[in-house]
Length: 201
Image 1: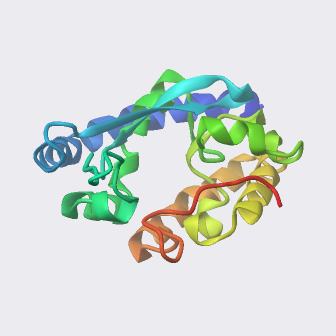
Image 2 (image 1 turned 180 degrees about the vertical axis):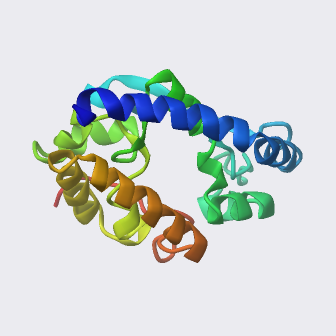
């Protein structure tokens, strides 16, 4: 019953309350990133959701669009702004996804929605992460976030799919605050976030 009804109801009510309560922070961060990113405070990107249905994820834009002499974008680390680094460290960049939760694209808790190009790289077991709505935070995020390997992250995502319950979600919810407070697992060594997934070796 929780998985098929109450989870979605809680998502909607919590997302609505979250947007109202956090609206002052949203306004301040939007202004800061508007100035830091030449008038572009938000980042929209297509991501696969439940059953691999494509939707547009909404996040605060933490990197500018600076390009090198060759015309290509600079590395993530070079494009990460001072304001963006703070927003990412505190996980404030995730707040706009509450709109995705309201719309039903996402859940508060679930496997993180990744890039579309990764769809062709998953094995059969890893694809099971799309059996539920993607989340703003998830089991993999409280067990390493970007500091663990892709294979371990997918293993944790599938574990969540098989063990989805109110108590699991409650544990993820409170553990997320602990991880954010301690700023754990934000990036992989040598990267602003995590190196790209290149498939299973």
